[in-house]
Image 1 (cartoon, one colour):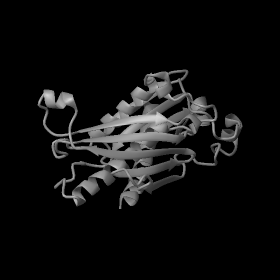
Image 2 (tube, rainbow, N blue to C red; image 1 turned 90 degrees about the vertical axis):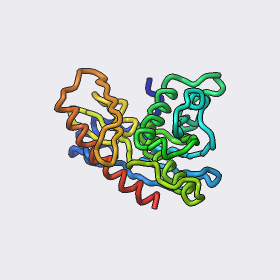
Image 3 (cartoon, rainbow, N blue to C red; image 1 turned 90 degrees about the horizontal axis):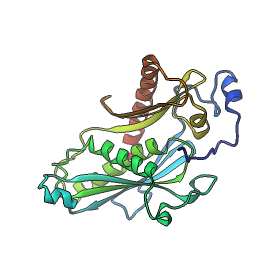
Length: 260
């Protein structure tokens, strides 16, 4: 169930797409929304960044615990661990979202997303080089206009790298355990046209909705794709994959600029 609310002012999507082939915000099919990383956004965190993708804004913080989860100690698993938590502030959408803490449990969508963030980051970390410590990545959506899970992954990577950089400066790590870069982006098909980085109004009207998590070298960590109506073809999947590769390449450049 999609809970992100349209922040695009009630624009008519069909009319906008038909207008000279442009999308509702004037972008071309293969164009990202404006992207901005503000590092050290929360000064008390080991690594922190505010990632903005269009009207979607997520605060990503990395905290370090100098111990590992109990199951790792019990099973004598070597190395450390990277995990994530995800949440959406009540006012992140036009219709207030109830805090999950007041419900007394974490919702299925939240659980799915935070597991996705955690396993995405672990895919590019040598956990043995991390040592016997755990890094928590907290992703808090302060404004939602589509693509919150992909923005969270992209921002969490920056927060992780900033935390690792600080641990190395403090002499707690001798080697960088991060193997390579990664980022994530949404793609979709609207009116039979593959498009990159969907805002909420595009996402809600898309015939196909997909998310891609990929490494800097082009390897795939995860692909999530759903037909909202008629099934999509292998060729359409490959078209979305090509868009995702382009968008993720551009995001990784911006991540490196933010990390320094």
